[in-house]
Image (cartoon, rainbow, N blue to C red; front, side):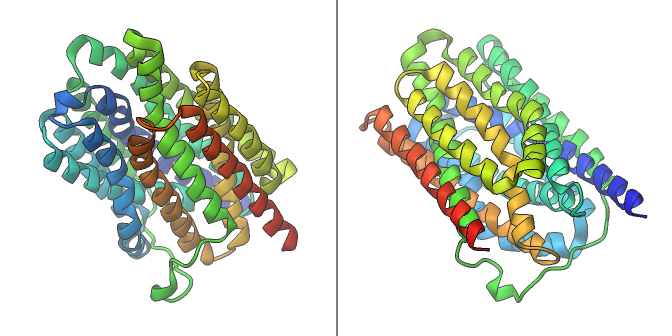
Length: 376
C-alpha cells in the first residue's frame, strides 16, 4: 500500500507539473519581449514594468479565493479552468494592444498561475516520503516548456515580430487543459479558521519575499535592460538564451536540489545557496552580465525545491496546503514589487549598488531561516 500511494503521488505530481509547464511559456515570453518591444504592444517601458508585476500582485488578494476554490473542488476542475483561461490570455497577447487590455489579461493569468502552482506544490508533498524528490522533479518538468519556448520565441520575434509566438503558445495551453483532465477530483482539507489563513510571515516566508524581490523581480526585469545596455543589437537573443538557461537549470538541477535537501537538510542547503546567490548577483550588477546571470539562474534552480520542502516540514498534515499558499503569496508580494523597483531604481541608481544590496538581503534572510531551524 505505501508503494501504491507513492506511485499515485508521483503520477499526480508529474501530471500537474506538465500542465503548468505547457501553460507557463505564454507568460515567460512576455518577460523577454515586453521590456524590449513595448511599443509593439502600444505601451511604455514603465507600463511594461506594471504589467509584469500585475500578475503577481493580483495573487496577493486573489490567492485566498483560489485556495478556497481549489480546496473545495480539487485539482482536476481547478487546473482545467486555469489552463483554459491561460489559452485565452495567450490568444489575447497575440491580438490586443494597449495598457488596459493587456492588464486585464495579466490579472487573469495571475490567478491561473496561482491555481496551477498550488496544485503542483500540494501534489508533490502529498506523501511525506519522497516529497523533496518529487518537488525537485516537478520543478524540472515545469521548466521544460519555457526552456524550449524562450530561444525559439526570441528568434521568432526577430523574424516576425513579438505577436505570432503567443498564438502558437495558446495551442500549448489547450494541451495543458487536456493534461489537467487526468488530475484527481478530490478536494483538500484546510487547517485553521478562514480568517486566520494568511498570517504574518515566518522566516521561510520572509526569505521567499526577499527572493521574490531580488530574483523573480529585480533580476528578471533587469536582465533584459542590462543585456540591451551592455550587449547591444543581439540583446534579444542573448537575453532569451539566458532566460532559457533559467529553465534548463531547473530541468537539470532542481532534482539535485531536492536530493541535496534529503541528504544534507533543506535549511543548510538554503543557507549555502543564498550566500552564493548574493555573490552572483553582485557579479551580475558589476557588468559581468553573462557569467553573473548564469550563476544566479543555476543557484535559483537549486533553491526552488528547498522552500516547498521546508514549508511542508514545518507545517505537517492538513496545515501544509494553506501554508504553501501563504508562502506563495509572500513570494508574489516580493516578485510583484521587484519589477516596480527595477523600473524606478535602474534608470537612476548604479546597477552594482542595486543588485549588491539585493544579494545581501537574500543572504541575511537565509541566516534567519537557519537560526529559526536551530531553535526548533
